[in-house]
Image 1 (cartoon, rainbow, N blue to C red):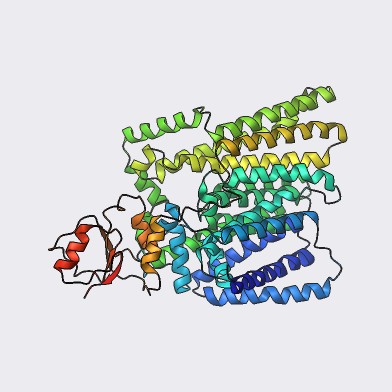
Image 2 (cartoon, helix red, strand yellow):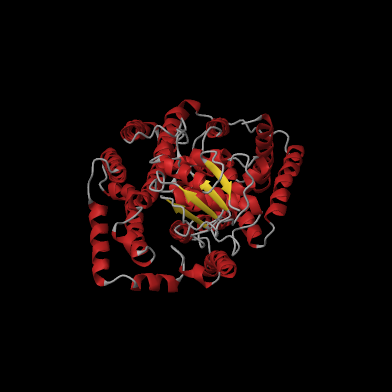
Length: 587
């Protein structure tokens, strides 16, 4: 990271901090919720700005507005102490990951097939992808995280390390809400809870290398946690709870279509606390619930109509599109035998106990430690009924998991192409999204009890915390989840490095046509989407053999990706000067 980028990063932090302290001062939003609230607001505003085709203008206005609010809030509120223990810990995490990210490059396949591809397209054109960007495959995927990354990169820089850190920043701000119940005055009690939360964070974000990629599964989990914690913490301040829930819910459904599941959980939880409080009339309940539903439906419809307008009706039938007609069409493409295979494989994979299955271990851990705690409380209070009262929380977590499994099965039947559905593509990742959500929710509940209960009960909770730390440490070691805090880079010797060297100091225009000679790399798995990302086009042909009669006239450029004697002989036969691996203009 050069000095200019460091300066820009610090300026971004000041602008962002200006918004955080303003909403803390003006709207009394708890400090732990201010960062994710602002990330959500910026993402939502930038998404709608993209739909209105004013991305760059909106980014500049938001960026400058942060400085103005910073000055205003300091003038109005000079005595506020922002150096709380949790704020300092959060700032250290931000700084640490900012440093780690500077040496990283994107690696994972899904970056190049979608997430990084649309990001590069947006930064290149200052627009959301549309009908002119014919290289976008998954046209209906919501772009909220990409819009926030766009905002960050325009403020700081357009290197891939900035993409990566911006994605991490979203996760960190959401994770920070898990510090909500920590009391700053009891500093000795913070250490074990902080270690527990960090270990859970590592498990949640680092079951694979995707924490340093642009995939949104872990981001969705943590934003889902932030949204439900808002309801639990602010249930006595209903207006703030309601409006924050609207913001988080809009952000969730604009992160990924499956975010609607977390929105439904929030809706049920909010309705439960409203009915339990008995302070609202039926008319008020109906008004708030109806307003929530209408705002969320409006958000979904706006995005759906945008996709249909810029891509046409074909986008309705793209993969994972939220459309009844698309669901019906996909389901009809599967015969009875396909459906039986999908259901059978799904049930088998869901109940199969495997010592290497991290999701099963986490579910067992949650239920076993919860039963131990409930037994302890019932014996201590000499009241067997207290066992069932205390276990209700864990039962609700189990119920969430089971309903999520049903919705996941529905996705394979109605949304996933047959070949991918039969093999249950992505099951481990999708399943872990909800399991890590439950783990975070359970851990936050443990933290709440740790600060709420009396000293005798706390002794047992401390035991549970120690068990949890050992358990998560075991998972980290067994699954080699050591990449989270060291940032392992897979760049050296990769196809990505080769492509970067080929295009170094070259000016590449989008939508050009290429023929790529790659006899050794064509089977590497993601050369085709990587080429889409690097060249911003799908007008390309990758070949693994060469002959004198090959027709190169439809193409503007010839890329030698792998070097061998055949390509050298071809260049000699065509009287072309050969410079090795690189890009050549076709006359």
